[in-house]
Length: 162
Image 1 (spheres, rainbow, N blue to C red):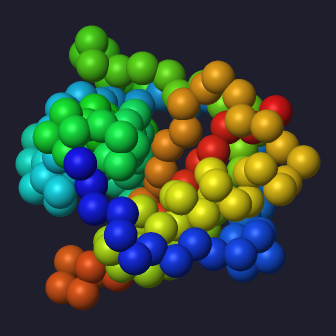
Image 2: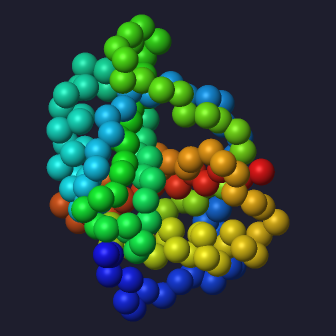
């Protein structure tokens, strides 16, 4: 299990300042699915980007979709997809469409060790006190900036709402 000791959740007001409500169009992506520890994400991202480098341009979005909460799923059994937006002429079978719609977007700026706390703040503080309900679509994250030396990241967490 994931270590959850000593986390300090954000208040509703702190969390709310980092959230915007956006409507997105459907988005076609190239993806690969992984099962294992979220700790392996950086290695998998490097390999994934190398494998699909011919499809990556300045406007390409790096998207991650995680399916499990590591506080309740065994750390080595977490399921996740790594994705890039697909060019129109891409014809391989490993594509799918991220379903658009209304999303609460949490604009994360911090280091990798702060991500778990941010997610817990969204789902355990902000969502219950907001006027929104999560719907049955899966959320995803879009990576906007990553500094591999310091592990500082800017990521938008997309939470599907109704």
